Length: 141
Image 1: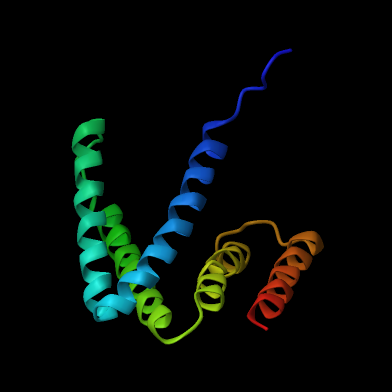
Image 2 (image 1 turned 60 degrees about the vertical axis):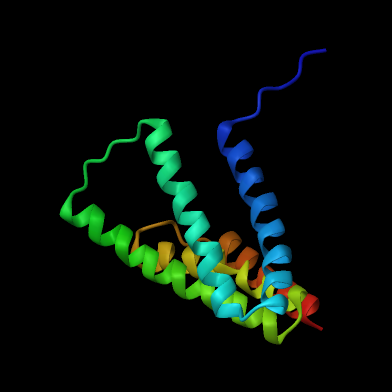
């Protein structure tokens, strides 16, 4: 029996899912042990060092265009806001609620993609996003 080949997108998507799930649980414990803003800063610093190390080891191009650099910087601003708000939220509320709401970032990205980036706007996609919203309401109860 042949084992089907798994695409790298599925492998990396799965690694992201598991890593972020563990990050939220450990981040919750950290934000209960020390000030959540300090926990976020330490976590982000370690993540930044890991990312820079990966760039060096992987041989990624270090060429930065003004547009690419600016977009990456803006992305970092929003990642930092989300990162800090996740830690503060974890220190003030349920891990289940905060992590579920935080994980809904894909809804925001999907709507931006459809509204501003030319992604196809279909009934099926809108229904899926609405059902995701229903799921969050149910989990938050």
